[in-house]
Length: 587
Image (cartoon, rainbow, N blue to C red):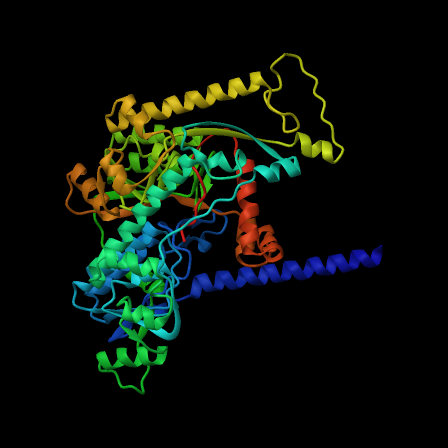
C-alpha cells in the first residue's frame, strides 16, 4: 500500500510540475510575445492564399478567463473577419491578387455565397483571382467560379452533379432496442421528430426538402452561370450527365480553364507578377491576414457604435457558449448594448436552427425591450429557422441571404421513454404518489392519455404564441401566418415573397439599415457575446485532458459518432422545442 502511495504521489508531483511549467511559459509568452503585426509579415508583391479548411463560424468568438485574463482570446477568423480581410486586401498595395488553392471549404452555402460576393467585389479593384484544385467539391467550385482562371490537376477530381441530403429513420431501432420517443408535434411539415415516428420520409417532408434544395441549386447555378458565361440550362445538362466527372470533361464543359500541376500553377502566377521563376512567391495565409487586417481596420475610433450580436448555434436554456445560443449570454449582450449610450443601433446576426422554446421566448422578450430604445435589425446566415426565426420576428427589419433556410414556424414536444428497454434488462420502476397527477413524466413509463393531453396543451400554447409573435412582428394576420407556418421551411428567396423577410443581402445591408435607422453616417462595430471559459475546458484545449468526445470519435469513427451524437442530442432535449425540422447536411 505504501508503495502505491509513493507512486501516486510521484505521478501527482510530476503532473503539478508540468502544469506549473506550462502556465509559466504561457505567462512568459503573454508578457514577452510580439504583437500581431510582428507575427504577420506581409511583404510587397504578395499573393493572398485563400484556404478555408477550418470550420467557418459567423463569429469567431471572444473568450475571457476570469482568473487568468492574460489568456483572453479574441480570434479574428470568423466569416466577417475574412470578408473584412478581402475588402482590405483590395486596397492593400502589398497584395497583388488572391490564390484560391486547394480550398476544401468548411462553411455553409450562405456563408460561401457571402465570401463569393466579397471576392467579386475584390475583382473590381483590378487585382487577379486564380484558383487551383486537386479536388473540387461542389461548394469549392461554387466559390472558385469567380476566379479569372480556374486550374484543375490533370488527374484531379471535380464534383458537379446537383445537391442531395439524406435523413436517418429510427422507428425500427426503437422497437428493437426498447428505447422510444414520446412525441407531440404541431405543423404537418414539422418533421424534426418524423424519424422517430416513421421508417420512411413523408410526402410533406419530401416536398419541402425538394423545394428548398431546388431553390438553393438554382441560386448556385445562376451565380456560376454569370461568372462562367454558361447558361443555366447547360449547367443542368452538365450535372445530369456528369460532364465534369474527369478533368478532360470538366475542361471541355468550360467549368475549368486549364489542366495543370500545382508547380505549373505557381509558375503561371510568378510569370503574371513578373517574379523570377527561381525565387519563392511571396504569400500570406487568409487566416493570418484576417488578424493583420483586423488590427488595421479596427484601429480607428468613432463615438458612434453599432453592436453586432451573434446568435449562432442551437438555442438552449442556459448561459450559452461559442456555437451554442443561451439566453444568459444573449440577454446580457442585449442589455449591455441597450444601456451603452455610444451604441446607436443593434444588428442581430442569426445562424441558428432554433431549440428551446422557453429560451427563445426569453431572448425575444429582451429584443422586444431593446427595440423600444434602439433600432434592432436582423441579418440571417445559413439558418434562421424555428426558434431562430422566433427571436428574429419582431425586428425592425429582417435581411436574409437568398440561400438562408428560414421559417419552420411550428412546435414539437418529445420525451424519451425506456419502459421496454428497462424490462428487457430486468429493471422495473414503481411509483408512489400523493396526488393523481404527481407523476407528469417518467422515463420508465409510457405517457398515459392525461399526461399526453397536458403536454399537448403546452405545445398548443407555444404554437399559438409563436403565431402571435410572427403576426405582430411582421404585421400579418394570424390566418396569413398560419398558411405559411405548419413547420414549413423556406429559403430566403421564397421567404421574401411570402413576407417573412424584408430584403435579400448580407450583414453589410443590415448594417446600412441600422445606421439609417439610427441616423448616423459613420460608426465603429462592437461584437457580442463575450464568453467565459472554465479551467476544465482550458485544460482540454491545451491537450492535458483527452475529452470524451475525442475518445468516442477515435473508437467509433467520424460518421458513426455523428449518428450517436444526433440520437443523444434528441434524447436530451427538455421542454417544448422550436427546432428546424431536421438536421440536414447538404452535399
